[in-house]
Image (cartoon, rainbow, N blue to C red; front, side, top):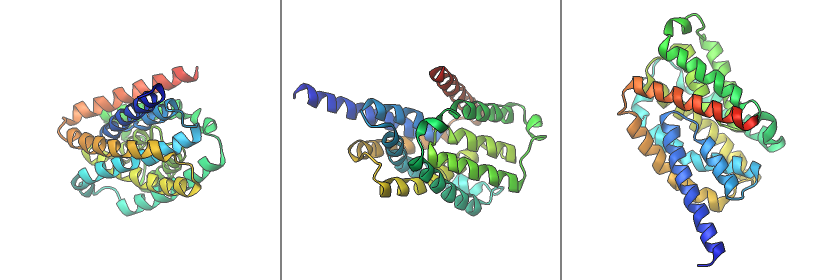
Length: 255
């Protein structure tokens, strides 16, 4: 095998590992796009195509994770799942169309601030619920917030898991597994709309995406099954630590 062949093989291996890790991370706490997007850039995929390809590649993993959490989703009776689902689909489509019309860099500048806000809110909800009780979102307010998150999810997607966990925390949910299941389902739905738009627009780099999709599905299911066996307190701490690490990284990257 010549040097070019080895380079292609190395890129595919890196993409598969990144996709598996992203699928597992999405199932546990979110933030998987922050692994697949840079990996696709490393493989030589242009930024807009890398963003679209990352969304498409992670979609099967989100579907697998949502299926693994189907019982927890059904138990989350506080949330009107059908309304949340419709808002996520519509918002995801709007965000995807915005991505196809505008450059990534404009919205990506807000990513560190969104991550900081979401991580802080989730941490307060997990460790100081008496403070959250004074900031609680009502039924209509949480729907508006979910719609805005869905637009962002269709546009860029990085950190939507933390934002949804923060919104569900402010809404009053405390069961981390039910919150995780809802987060995965809603992320899958908003990305489903985005996937359709990206495919129709021809912005997906299929060779890399196909390889990553298989690995992401395996990682998503493995991560979901593993996350349900973790103590809720440990999982909440892991979410906060991952959020803090990603926030610091993207602030440093933008400096």
